[in-house]
Structure formats: structure tokens, C-alpha cells
Image (cartoon, rainbow, N blue to C red; front, side, top):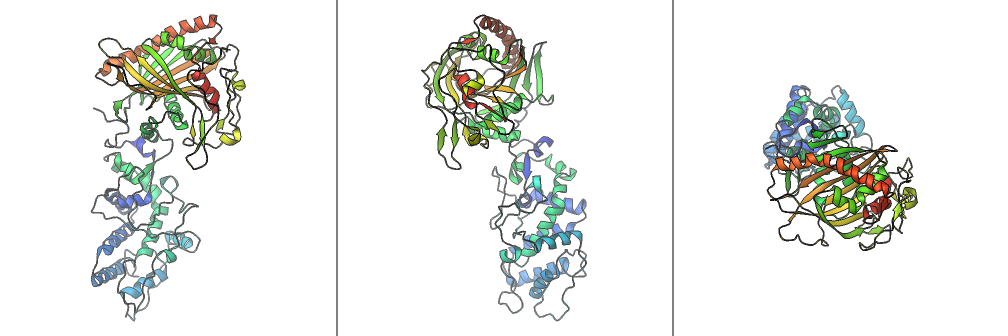
Length: 575
């Protein structure tokens, strides 16, 4: 069985790497990646002295006996700092002198000279004398596997001040504007000079270590991440490794999938949900989607990748595109109508309206939410409205990411309430600071014998995507205390996906449907695939029939207009 896309035990594939920001410091906290990096420095860069020094520092700190620690410090000085050494690090003379006076407190020899500086040294010297803040960093034990496997991937060791103010996406910068670490001289405890009662302090090499790490980060880290050496190493590792040494980029596919298990606990739709839906609708890569049925006016796809979402494991997305000779508003008007839904969605047996949730925007960083409209109870049925002459999209603007859309801009006064959200209050909201207007229903589908009916708690929310000029209606299963328990012999199922209405011209609309569906129970996958394959053909045939029927009625909405209301309230936005 092929592992799911977000199964952390599966082997890493090349596309995975681009979805993570790899953290420099975390490389040293993971034994295998640290070994990979040191091998790269030795074999690819011919620069083994830095990695050798870091390993030596790690061993140096383990030594508890003062005299033995001094003996090792002397060996390290001779190997990495003495003028005659073949593995000499590029260091300023005053750094060498401070260590020299500790390892040779009574020596009358000449102090170490300042050897010729390389480009690496020049870069570091410039940083030391600037306002850049250099932390003291400890390396991890190479002989011990890291147990730090949290999803953030920070991997910071105890007592370590992070050098990871930037990650793989911006490795040329040392720190960001929010860094609060002190400079090398202030951050490290002063090293006792000749005459101190402490013979050899454990922090003797802290400053040098920070300089070495800075050199590696600025001059070798980015090249290491893009090297075949690192990529070949990752091809043999589980996906979990990337979570340990990095963090998921925002809007990456893995990040979206990771968050879906949590979003199912929320009855409202979020911008994050819609961004994932949009990503799946717009993706037709042949290595990711298999065509399982097609004709002149429709195509049906099954994702080659499988996904794990909570208790639903190893399932695929399916989607189809159907072209109708009607405007987007006419198609939406028909497909939103509950009377027609029972007809064109053949398995749908019953719909019960549970609740309607208004759009809410958070107040800054606290947990208080402000409602943007008056509440509407499920029992309040919207008034009849005419749609045949409505425009294709809401009034838009080029700059904001989220725009209000009062009912007059949609020409769809299906309710007495309109959105009062202004551009100024919504232009900078993000995916986590807004809960979109949402309709909550309980829907029961009857399957063919011998399979039991399926029960879905469905959260529905709509908006207009300015980027693709497409109306999106998101639909997801969720947990809700308002839902009734499944009836006897009815199985509660799970789904996530939505509908898309893209107007090609005034008289042509591409209707798309996409879902990840877990019907639960023991329905063989070939049967499910067969049902989905025929679904697009059915929608094209039956949908056209009811569009023509609704055309004769003037495309009047009589009831069940809560889906329309969410589009009115949520408005138009750039996802």
C-alpha cells in the first residue's frame, strides 16, 4: 500500500524539500544531518577544520575534570589556532590570545601572530565590529539521535541561544529585526586569564564556536541545502526528519493538509480552508491527477496522492469539470436551490438546516470576535429574488486582500441584512484572524443496497476569488453540538471540498466539484471510484435539464438561500 502524502513515516521525495524552511541550528541537533553536513564540508568544500572544531568543542564540554579539560583545550589550540597548524581557523589575534593565555598561563613564548585573513575572516570581522548580535551556540552530541521531533522543527538544545533568526529561505542574513541576543563579548561569560583560580572554563571556546557557526551559515549553508549531497541523503530518510530540522512553509500543500484535521473541529470556514480548496481546483499536474472519465463537455479526475486527515486514512481527492451553456449566476442559482438539489444529486435524501454563523473578525491578538452582521435564524427563509440580469462578479478593487461585498454589488438582495465590513477593517486580515459566514446543515445520502445511508454534518461557505475570477462554495464536515446523532443503521461519514463556478463568457460556465470523502464502513474502493466516475456525466446530463427548467421560471430562488447569503456576506477577496 502506498503511503499517504502526509504520512511522516514515508520516504522523502524531492517535492517535499521545497515545502520546508530548514533551520541551520537544527542541523547540528540531529546526528545524521550533522554527519551529512560535516561530510559535505570535508568532501565538497575541502573545509574540514570547521566541522572538526565543532566536534571537538562538543567533546570538550563533556569533560568534567579540570586538568583533563585543560589538556584537551591545549590540543585544540595547537590544532586549530597555532600558527604552524594545518587546520588553523581564521580568527582575530585577540581571540587566539585569550585562549593562549589560558592553555599556557606561564609561557614566555611569543604571542600568536595574526595570520593572513581570508574572505571568510573578513566577513566575520566586519560582523563582530558592527551592531550584529552573535549568540553563543552549543552543538549536539553526534553519537546520540535527537529526540526533539516536534512539528515546529526548531530543535534547539537546552542552553543554546539560537543562530536561527533566519532559516533556509533567507540564509544570507544573520539576524532579523526582532533578535534580542547580546553581542559576543556581552553574551559569553568572561574567560579567566592568567592567575584565575579556574584553570579551564567550559565556555573557553564559546566565542570561537559562534564565529565558526557564523562562517558556516553565511558561506556554506545555502549551498549545502541545494547540493546533490544533501538531496541524496534525504532520499533515504523519513518525512519526519524534515519536521525535525525545519518548519513547514505557510501555504505549502503539506501545511494545508496538516491543518485540516484541526479545521474540521471548527464549524466556520476560514480563509485557510479556501486557499487549500483553490490550490486543489487549480492543480491539474498529470503526475498528481489521473483522468478517470471524460467527454467533450466534462472531465473527471482522481488524485494519485492519498491523504490522512484525522481518522480518515489513505484516501484520495476526486474532482470533475463540467461546462454549461449558462452564466455563472444562473448555474449557481439552480444548484443552490434545494428543490433542484434533491433531483440532480440523486443520492441526497434529506437536508436539515442547523444554524447560520455570521462572519467574525478578531480584535488584534486577543480571542474576542466581532460579528459583522445581524444574526439570521435557520427558520427565517429569504425572500424571492430575480437573478437573470445580475453581473458576473462583485465590484472589486486592486489593493486589498479582502473586500466587503454589500448585496447591491451582487444584485442579489436575498436577505434583509448586508455586510457592514469596510475595506479599511479587512484589507490586512489573514487566514487565522477571520471566521467566514457559514451555513450548517445535516444531510443524509442513501446509497445503493446493500450499503447503509450516510450522514454528513456539512459546513458551507461561499466567496468570490478575485485572483481567478471564480465563485467558490466550500463544503466540509465538522463537529457540532447542534447535530443530531445518526439514526439507526445510518453511518456518519466525512468529506472536505467544494464547488467552483468560473464564467468563461456571458453564456458559458465551467462548474467544478472537488471532494475528499470518507464514506466509512467497508465499501470497496473500486465501487467508490466507479460511483465518482459516473458522477460528472450525471451532473452534466441532469444539471442541463434543470438549468433549462429553471430558465423557464426566470431563475427565481424560492428557498434555501443560505449559501447565497454566505457569498453576500463574505464578499470578494484575493486568496
